[in-house]
Structure formats: C-alpha cells, structure tokens
Length: 491
Image (cartoon, rainbow, N blue to C red; front, side, top):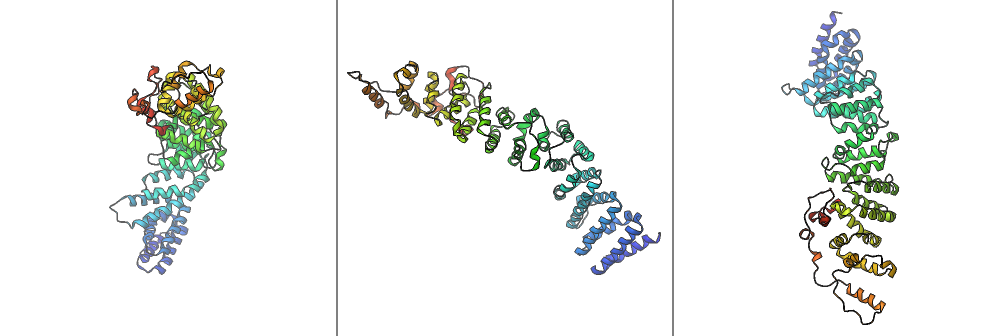
C-alpha cells in the first residue's frame, strides 16, 4: 500500500495542470485510491482535494462535493474537521481565498453534516460550536437548512435536550430555532420545558426562549413574563398570543394553554406600568379584541366583571368596557350595570377611569341617563363641564318622568340640572302644560359663552399624570391635563 501516496501525489499534480475534461478523469482515480483502496490517506489528502472546489468548472466543483460526501460516509468526524478548517479560512481576512467558493463549500459541507444528524445525534454539539464561529451568511443558511434534521431528531433526543441545557454562547439563535422547529406541530414535553425554564432563569434571561414552550409553563410564569413578551416585535407578540389562545394554525394548537382567554386579558390590564409602557399594553389588548371567535360577549362580560371588582380599578378598565360594547352592542344593559357599580366604587377618584366613564356615558345615551342621575351633584357637575351638551337632554329626560318618579330626584341634582338657566317670570296661573313648555323654552342654550366651555386645563386643579391612587379629596375629582389629553388611551 506504500505506493498509493506517491500515486495520489502524482495524480493531484497532474490534475492541477490539465484542462477540465481530463481533470475529472484524474480526480476520479484519486477518489478510487483514497476512498476504496486506502481510507487512511483521507486525512493527508483531503485539503488537496478540497482545493479543487475553487475550480472554474462547475463539474469539477460538483465532483468535489460528491467526494466529500463519500469520504464522510467512511469517517463521520472528518466532516467536522473539514468545516472547522473552512470556517477558519473564511474568518481569516489575511488568507486570500476565493470567498464565494469557500463559502459554498462550507454550506455544502454543512448540509451534508445536517443529513448525518438524525443518524448520530451527538453531532449536534459540534454543529453548535461551528455555528458560533461562522459568518452571518452561513449562520442564516444553517438556520434555514436545519428544519428536517432537527425534526428527525425529535424533542426526546437526549443530545438535543443537552444542547438546550448548555446553549453555548453565540448559539442562542440556533437553539431558539431548534425549539421552534420541535414545538411547531406538537406540544412541548415536560423535559423540554424544564430545560428551557432552567436556561431562562439561570443563564440566559432572554424571554424569547420561553415562546416555543409557553404552553408548557405555569399560569403565574406566563403572567410574570407578559411585560417582557408584549414589548417584542409585533409579529412575535402575535405568535405568542396565537399559542396562548390556541389560534395558531397547526396541529400544535391541541396543546392546552395555561391561561384562559379571559385570564390573558385580565393579566394585561394588571401589568405594572413601571414594567411596561402603556402603548405596548394597549396594542396587546387590541390583539385580544381582534380574535372575535375567542373573545365572545360572554368572555368579555366575565372580564369586565372581574376588572371592576378590583381595587384599585385598572387604568384601562373603561377602554375595555367601551371596546366590548362597540364589538357587542347587546352588552348595553350589562355595561349600564357596571357603570352603576362603579359609582358605588367612587370611580371619580381614578382620573383615567373617570375620564373613560364619562366617555362611555356619552356614547351610550339615552341608556346612560339613569346612570348619570345616580351621580353625586359635584360629579354630575363635572360631567357637564366635560360635556355641556348632555345637560339639556338629561333635564328633558327627567321632565318626562311622572310626578311620582320626579319626587325621587334629589333637589341637589335638580339644581345641577337646572343651573345656568335664566330666572323665569312665574306664570300667573299654575297650568301644568304651560309650565313644562316654558321650562323647555328656557332650556335652549343661551347665546353668550358659558364658563364651562373654557379649556379644561385652566379651570381644573392639576393632578400628576397616570395617577392611579384614589384621590383623597373628593373636590379634586376632575384633573387638568388628565381630562382632555391622552384620549387615545380610552378610545
């Protein structure tokens, strides 16, 4: 066998100098010698063979890849050494390699390597270490090409579980991609969830690791992660919600979510505003409202009920009430009930919620008239300062009551309803119909500007923005900037 090395050297030298068509024949002889006659020569001559990968002939380049494939069937480890070498070449700026071809070779070698993965799971660790060293283009190729082999290994593969557990620095994107592939069509196994949970809590606190296994987590873990999750890119947030709400379109949706749709929406309202900006929270609640099949009127009624019973009242409560009502107008009666209960809870002590309360009454008139009449005089006055146009219809509404019903309206409320009216000459004869007509006539808005029309900012005491603590002093119930600004929070 000692003659073989000389033969190989001879043939390789020859191949370097001859035209393409003859070159292939010579290289095939080399392959025959190295692979079939004396595989021990592989180590010595592999690099020389690989050098032909930069040949200008596509046939020669294809032949080299075929050669590598044959060689690797003989020796699994060979491929890795090869990829590592090529990787070094790619990274070393000083070596002048024909870059596209070297990159192409690395890619081809990696594809070969990936095809071996399901047969030898241990190879995945080497893949990860090569990946961390690779240039960006090659990383992208790997992430694209990895799907079949990883699926072939499956989430019960001890080696894959070990990879997740150890997650080498620089291989985070590779590990995340593996997790997504594994959980795309099937719920995550408890073992996989355990590894990811450990990785997240003990080593790499990147919330994106949790997404593929989110339905394997406990309810409180998901709620804890929500502030971080909803700050991610909108497409990612949508994916998280699809998983949690079971609206993802794949067989994987059979996995049971740790949160009911109602739990999710309530948890969003209760996110600590120091941990997440309001805009992200509002966008997330909008995603929920977008899933009409999931958020039925029954689900939303339960959500509103629970939010209303909380203390302090959640800042976005009225926004959700208005959105629910817009989606399901038949919830009108239920919403009136909520508004009445909020009066008992002194809703005006929460500036943001109070602003939404008034808006909701505006949108639901005449249904809301009975609610407005339950307000204390100071708060009813505040409603009219915000919405002067509501005073007259409400007064007319009261006038339509029977005398017996009218007797139930406190004088203090009547005084608020009838404020801003010119004093009338009393009619000579107490004729009922006449009196009503006169009152109605007197109710037409007076032409001179009314002080209530002034901008809210000037007429009201200031309150720190986003204030959520109940305001102790009932007089300071309507706030300045709070009142008119930020209406998009409530829309």
